[in-house]
Length: 362
Image 1 (tube, rainbow, N blue to C red):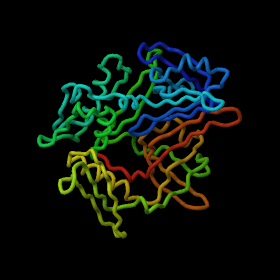
Image 2: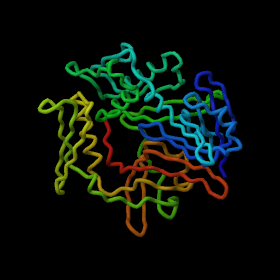
Image 3: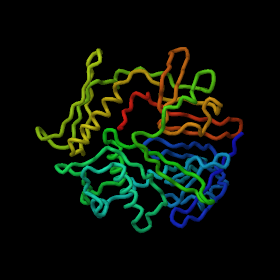
Image 4: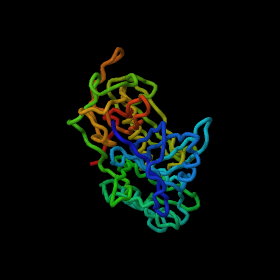
């Protein structure tokens, strides 16, 4: 049976506060282009201990499995809930959403013309961590891409008077067609938990032919295969900023021998024709899929060990149940692990999307 440990650290000083925090009902995991989450409870008799070592907005929390760090992030909430003391945390990528550009254009790094979105992501992190009491010690990969954002006619500008969150700046870069992706990683480094934003281009992860998820082998439970035409569309109409005839608009359409179905995507804050067109294209690709497995509960099995697959990987999924037969490639967009507790075994829940929902730059 795997051994789990939970550690806390002061966000600014780096002081380790707890080396083995007594938590129960734990669930945590990372996600694609997001911070992931962590939830747990503390027994009431130990709540005083948790309160001294879990200061919301100022405490880092890490989860370790068999001496390998699996997750890290910031505690955002710690409060009584009924007969329990509940803890909620999110990965380091949640922090930019609590920070804003007070100088404009990331203190002179922009406005951006034909800029690499990977550079803008690094600039956003550099800006927020150079401000007083804002350094989380997060390192961002030096990944580069061949995609660009901003033109001489429409540079990508970050105006201080609009007070944009730095999280929204990073989200804009991910929304660029064929743009980069990111997730988070933690690992021990010289006895200290090191934290990193992994930036991937043209994608995160890879198509894995060495592992698989199959009914009767390592799939313990599944959400039924979904066939939903309400979400389907070959035509997407993107509407951006502006009013009347001056409103930004982009249309992305394809023909595939099926009845025409349309969807309207509203991005009211989008002022760039280029970015609106990119978002519309991405939305159309994602909506042109019917029939997919969205969630599986798996066992830790040689066919796909916990830790063997990463966020962004494509894995062959074979689901055979009373309702459907599914055999195809699915992409890991998130996973959560519930450590063993009492008579319950370890449970790993994997969130998936059909691999052909995604397009990549290159």
